[in-house]
Image (cartoon, rainbow over all chains, first blue to last red; front, side, top):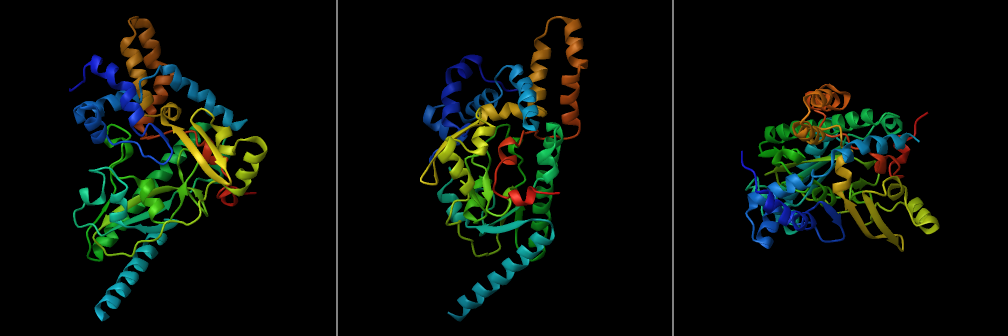
Length: 75
Length: 289
């Protein structure tokens, strides 16, 4: 199974996220994986991997916190 | 000239037939977007012609209006499950409609890729863009969700087709912000959706219009915690746990059991729907006795 190197991931994580659709707003759309790869001089496959990992790369507690957040809707 | 008039009239008849079938099948709204207009606004590789070379129209349907009861349900998991089911219903209608268009003699392909089929949240074609161009709604402060002026939040699906259908026009007026949200903004500098989810959403209204908005999907994402993504996160924690006894507690415990059940029952998402449940657009459909 293909996996990118942790070094490559750490180096480009923030940049890839900022360029992507992960944070949306304004009139400018986020870049596609291909566009990000072109801009950063990376392989499309690597950008895709970075994006896939980065969007979930937070402590599991964040997922658990969501339960409490959702419960508040019934307040 | 005569041929042109004939073609135009045939195209309208065809569009009416397709619309009628879509609505009869359960869609609540129907529109057509021009593939050229979509292409102009899309990155390379994300245009309708990249998937169907002889595409002439993009049919957009919206439906799956959330049950009013679901929006008031006190258990968020129920809401997540109902939302998943509603999305599935709209997808099913789009598949049926594609079959119907092919029966009429044209190529048709429903957008079959669920958001994560590529492993990332990077859609092949932006359904939001198609819905906007087809005149079905406009983007909102609530995470850029396309709000329909009549129903508010809906799920959308698209069908690429070689059928020549006259495209609809985008709406002239923005659906969001609703007048009551403008009044709330003037009083309190917030809106129902921004107040409901200050973590994921931010924005500002100026002169009755959205001045800017920001949706942080990274913060919204973990709220779909009863899902395959939650499963991936938990699995990683379990694998990394070195104590076998503790690992056993984790695998057999309630959290992991609920995540496994999400996979078993195809719960593709368990979003909180907080921002949409407080949105005043389409409120009349959520008011029951």
